[in-house]
Image 1: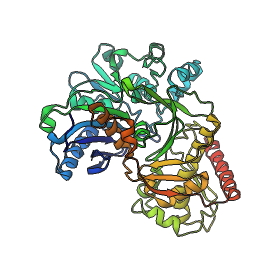
Image 2: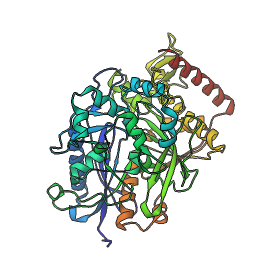
Image 3: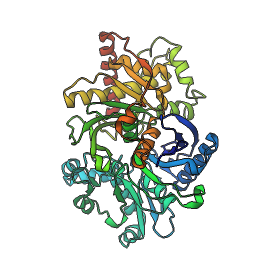
Image 4: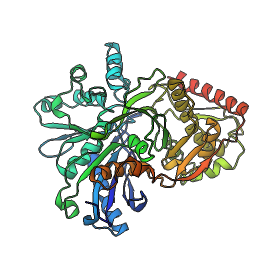
Length: 497
């Protein structure tokens, strides 16, 4: 039953921060809170998070968002969860205590395991069943690493003492005590058959993964249980869950096959709705489940992943000390007419699609005595647009179509220099929505659909409104020259191993 005062709470657990956002029926933000958390780098190319910190800061921002909006738990219709994908957590079934830090999606520690599996000839089978590639990016090989490195862990897992989950499962477990995931997150583990929509026994056996550790897979718009009463003062139903990039596609209301969005976050993730059947890519892209609406059916997507997008700006700020705030990068970039032939390839953890080169390393080329911090900052921003161009060009080659426009979201989409350069280098318009919190909005939509807060997809589509449009102002000759030089820089990054 709908209530006039009801709202949907979205928990948006990202790679570098946790957010909680309350949405009304028009899809507008009425309350929000955000908190960053520590990134852990044990070795070069390794990235970890503390699972307890993830939970604590996510719960804290949920409470703060409600306080900011002056909303009580009695006014929350339902909760939707969206999360950084592929990040791998193991915890004890009885105590809920993590057995290791979360291994983050960016982490490259399982590279050698991927090479072993490739040498065994397993990649074609895994790719056909999961739509993914053998890459350290995905959860499956991170699990193999944990079982190899922690004495006795695999035996405990086989006895049913250990549970595995991506971040959504970890949050659901802490909120409800249930061990669940949804189809979108399951489809990113390297263990889930996207055709039969079930954990794949052949892959589990090949990787030595005990089935007892796996969560039950639900639809993305489904009943994920009730929150424990002591958390919010009443039990609140969790009715939506999706990995962050699929949630963003849904939040953009990309319900028609062929519609495309790009999220400019820590990484950049371009997804195209491919309809009710998966498309296996020959262009270095991934096939994945976009969402599962239960009786409403399953929709698939083609995806390209850039590992370092907005994170390159964080690198300028935190590691180089070149800027004090992320916004300073735009100021520097605009202070000069061009990058001075400087190109930065931020392959800090290898290159994702369409190259899939985990051994590539970050590279800056074209430096002269006259190169300044402004040139480096501009080249860093431009690198985000170049990498996204590579994804969209691969999608067009795959579908033999012309993608007419791009919907954009994520923190870095607030950078108008970047969005204009993206439109220029694509030769296509880029649309920014009025509500930029599209990832959280997608999770809210999935929850609200299940609860009846929204009546259907047509109801949601009416909520999408354009805030700004960036149109291409670059000549084709200049575009082709810049892209040619960018691809030379990429080859330089790939040659230094």
